[in-house]
Image (cartoon, helix red, strand yellow):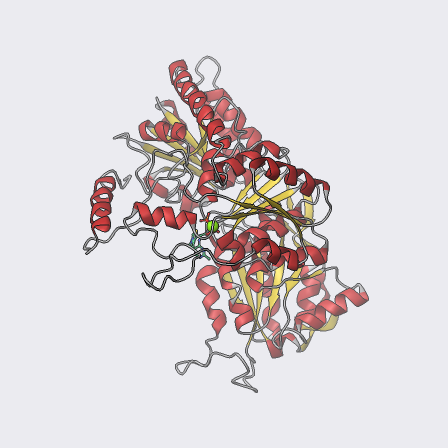
Length: 628
Ligand SMILES: Cc1ncc(C[n+]2csc(CCOP(=O)(O)OP(=O)(O)O)c2C)c(N)n1
Ligand SMILES: [Mg+2]
């Protein structure tokens, strides 16, 4: 039997019938469809979504975003919160509507998070070419702006004929649900093809379940891994996002407790082991804790679990200084497992950790690190925790320090509450100072570190977990890039608590600039000073709190840490999206991670500040290693 539907109607009906399943738990794979309509999709996908809603033929709720980039962020935030087992589709109009999603696609792919993107495309028939917003490439009639999605998608296709849809859909669902391959999946939909009717086989629309696998380690690879660990005197485990996506927290804790191996975390992995577990040593790398970084420096074996070893994690390949350091990488993606010439253990994080625990716990011949090793880092951690307490309660005047705001928030939040952040000086401070109590509490997007993710990503996180309070932390720079989803939150009644931290510009890049001899050039939001010709004049008459109120949020202005704490209580008690506004001192002190990050400094310069920075840069770079 066949059913006559347009391509867009078939697509919607198909998406509503897809499920994912892991550990016997089944859920809808595509939870709904974000969109912004234009001539490219209004009559195609738009009509199909309307028809689905009106007739009840397909259940695919439509969410209206205010910016296409943001709807991809919301989908990624949602998928991350749901451990990659569920995501959204995103429909955009041809041209700018579609290319606005490219940044979101890159974010999803880099973070290995599934999102389904449906950019609209020019006429497959070319009947009306060049259609409004069509890129005309004199070299080929087959190129459109949607080709820009190719490098940032894990699967990409253009549906030029209805017959191509079924195989493209099956391939797309497979990639979305493959934990090793997942990322942005792009199906470009020419606007005429969306509206074209076709006789589809009924079976295309029967419910389909995509089983998310938990691959076991290969026995020979497990044996090699066990041999490496048994020879380790000063091992360090690095827990990445893969631990959390795999829900391997209990397996991680059992492995650590069985072996005594300390656990450091990455931005995506923070919370995999609670901060106050005796074997938890905090963030590792450029913005990590001095405790984890001291262990990293002397580790003879680094066991990376579910990490892609970003340059922040490895301190640009300076974090590990033991002359014979070896890497053992447990990862579901062979690509990541092979990094740093490591011994690769390709497996799901949970099954892999369970296998390692079992293999190392042989009765009478179990592996465990020496007691002095544990005592050493626990003493160091106790000293470090006192420093964190100080940073949380600095009493900085007249404006509070950012570390005090983060401290107040940390002490205020319940374990199941979620903090969302992405860019600026906060991810670094958070990675170093945040005390995560639950695996889903710390939601910092630091694969792409995309300014503007915060509010949109928070929206997705809250949609995924309506039973958790979401606290979006956003700097003034990020806020100015993408505040518009406050309107979506208000319209949908999706309650967000938004902490807006204003420090008059880019504290992060300002500090980085200064450390690299570039004197904070161009990093402050100031008037242009006519005498210097630079942007270092007076403070601008900008009121971001009023801006947030104008978008429909409740706003609480605070000036002190005490007022900030009271406002947090009020925000939590409210059922409306509430912005807690606070100004902080961008120059307040922050503890040192005792680490480094490679940002090249000009080799030739007319500026003394740059020349000095270059000398320091060259000295630091000598510690960089290849790990062959
Ligand atoms: C889209 C985007 N553009 C540029 C950058 C580079 N960048 C990183 S942090 C930052 C400044 C962020 O300012 P703000 O949100 O106010 O945070 P602050 O640094 O003041 O803490 C910039 C420009 C980025 N990460 N993302
Ligand atoms: Mg700022």
